[in-house]
Amino acid sequence: MPLAVSFVFGGISSEYNTSVSSLTHIISSYLSMPRRDRSFSVKNMYHLSRDDGLVRTIPFHNDFTISELTAYLSDTSTLPGSTLSATFDAIERRKEYVVNLLLGQFGEDGGVQTIAALSGLKGTFGDPQVASLTMNKYAMSSFVSSILPTDIVRVPKTTLVRPRYVADAIQSAKLRHGQIVVKPNSLGSSLFTGLFDSIAESEYDIRALLSAIFKYDSGALLQEFIPGDDYSCGCIITSSDIILLPVIKIETARDFFGYDEKSTDSLAERKVVGSHEDMSDKLKYITKSIANSSDLCNIARVDFKVTDQYEVWFLECNSIPSLTQNSLFVKMLHHHGKTALDLISMLASKSSSFKRKPHLVE
Ligand SMILES: Nc1ncnc2c1ncn2[C@@H]1O[C@H](COP(=O)(O)OP(=O)(O)O)[C@@H](O)[C@H]1O
Ligand SMILES: [Mg+2]
Image 1 (cartoon, helix red, strand yellow):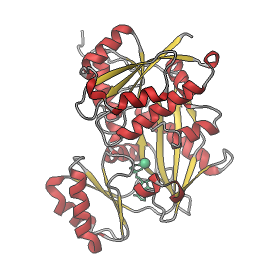
Image 2 (cartoon, helix red, strand yellow):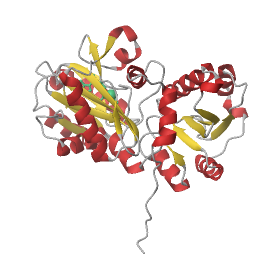
Image 3 (spheres, helix red, strand yellow):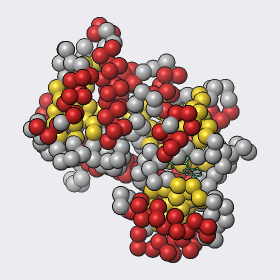
Image 4 (cartoon, helix red, strand yellow):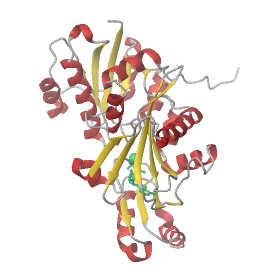
């Protein structure tokens, strides 16, 4: 088996559990596959602790079981840990290929990508600057609106709020009428994401939500509400090609894929859009343009709203979509005839790892 792969997972963000579930899904699929059919070998699983920020190494072996993984995770504090940078340097010396399953803050925003680039690690980390751009919903929306015209994709009117000018931001957002979405600029999973009938009627609740957001995020968005269904389009980016996955439409009772809808299956219906349907081609075209222009690598999932008049609105680009068993990305892979394991072997064999350019000009 020529390819050897390790994983880094866990992390210090609110998406810790999703990261652990992504790894668990990958390892249980791997264990249930007959050995002769496995296209890569698993080396190590590196757990970044949310308690002390240290990394513990969980070695994979021939008789490894999911209960062994669960036992490791139930109390990692007894194992010796080391800092992320020391771990990455050691991994680089062993020439392991690492799949980054860290989500959210520090995992997806350029934090871990910078340390990986400094160590010269091979893996799915990608360019730290691209990670920072995609994680910043406000900046990424500006980027998308600058590369594509409004008849292709629009971005909702948005007020960026910082803790020091909440009153001014609320005042200027009040000039817009209609329902309003309040959300963090860079957290995920619809955490602290609220829908309000108007700013004037709900100012007290909106201010309370903004205070909650500012405990975890330096920015929040007050955004016009776009009615319609959610759509999501995923892609795999290899060094020579972009593979666009089947588009998924998400229907919810209130046209809002909020925290409750994401965590309760019965509140959101996820349907695969047929490749012959018009919306599929359009969303794939937009996703491909975004991936090419922003220099994304490995994988990405772009979230949209589409109105009854077929207007397409960009919401966000996820550079590390979760790979849990029930995730949108795994569903997209499935309808493309692939599994998360196929994805990993494709990334390890066909996508190029980010290499930092020299900083000094000779
Ligand atoms: N401006 C908006 N109009 C309508 N719905 C929105 C808007 N912004 C967010 N939403 C809803 O909230 C969900 C989460 O927002 P999103 O920007 O994708 O952030 P994340 O998924 O990172 O939490 C979306 O899938 C969508 O259903
Ligand atoms: Mg989203």
